[in-house]
Length: 323
Image 1 (tube, helix red, strand yellow):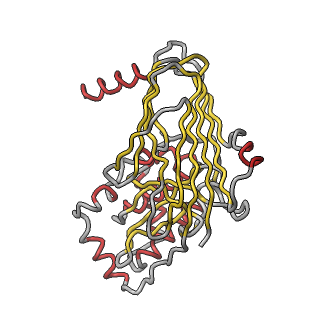
Image 2 (cartoon, rainbow, N blue to C red; image 1 turned 60 degrees about the vertical axis):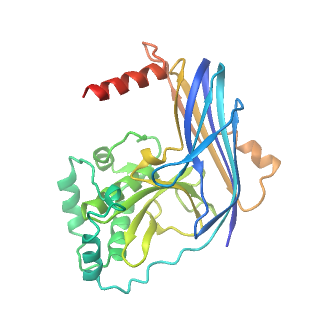
Image 3 (cartoon, rainbow, N blue to C red; image 1 turned 180 degrees about the vertical axis):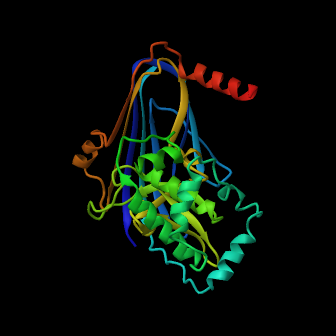
């Protein structure tokens, strides 16, 4: 039963002072049957209070506002989490009975959100490939594992070629991406075959450097297995979720689990850096210094026409209401 110490720093830097920064964060893992949150705290700079609530899915969500002018915003998460190994499904049910059970759930309110497929232009092409691999002679556990292996072998793990707005068609065309792309593609495939599936955000803990996604937030999939429940599977690493995964939140897709999002008044140019350090021992002074050297950095240049993000948000809302 390993215990992990997590330090997760998100930092925004602005070229000129911004104001009225309103933010939502989903960075608080909760205790479950297989993970125990020993300690957890979030520090915001400039200092402000965080109000919390639980969303529709049961994820803990924080909201905060910084009114005064500032040129930097940092969000530091520190947590100590103990995890347990998760037993796999026993797979005693016959395959036919499992598929019949799933068919009975199609109109069940607890599963509707996790069975609705998105519009995908390449759906027919994707299904041609997957139909050759899987059939309903497989149990749901076998079926999910086979699709996860296919995603793992089809996509190349490559940073910088996708972003949070990249859709399934783009992922399929590129055949490359990062953990959220692997998760989104597997979810879409599972839903094509009416297997309830959901997106999970969290961390993957190192025991070496053999796993993809270490040093940043991670994403995987939970699929519903009859007579077992929700089973976590990590298509980025082609493995079942176990005691090296820390779950933060789950939802239909990345947008339901976005770690940090918000609006502010000021220049839209900014720099975003993210660093995650996970150890099996208490963080030492020298390790804390490493967190400043960002694992992920993104620069957003000043547009030709400067429009503050709050104004852009209002315009987008107005456009949606007019449609």
